[in-house]
Amino acid sequence: MEIVRLHDEGPCRLDHEENGFSSNEVFDVSIVDGEIQLAARSVEHFTKTYESDDSPADDVESYGAFVNGTLAGKIELATAWNDLGSIEHIVVSREFRQSGIATALLDFAKTWAEDRQLKGLRLETQTNNVAACKLYLRNGFEVGGFDRFVYRTQEQVSNETALYLYWFPER
Image (cartoon, rainbow, N blue to C red):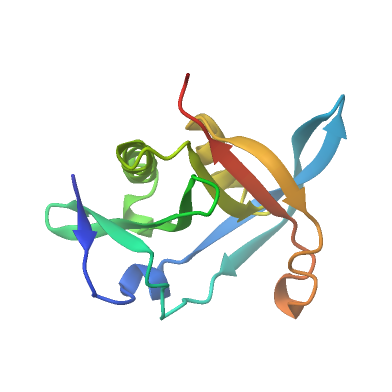
């Protein structure tokens, strides 16, 4: 596998066709002794797809993970105001899921942040994207906060809770 910068290519097949997930569980969020806790709960099977943003911000850098010349995954990274790197978007082709591509992209993001002398990484996900949350937690991210109302005005996702996850290098 090779991870390379994608220059001015705009949205790709992954952004339109692969940008979603299916699940039969969600996380419930609680605070216990001042710590944010996630507890998985079974729900009726569902599929969620994300709308593609065809106009990424100028300060976002896109990188693609290629396997034998095929784009298997993509990550978009930016520098945030608080000296953190921000994972703006990460997606892996269905045919390459569960094969280490997402972990390789997260490792790449960590190195990217360290090379820029950033203090860590942040990302936003949702409590219904349990597989992604588990991936991030396995890769050293921790829940720093949640917001039950951030999607309230968006009818199709108004019941979702945003999770903010962070990774800081070992000191």
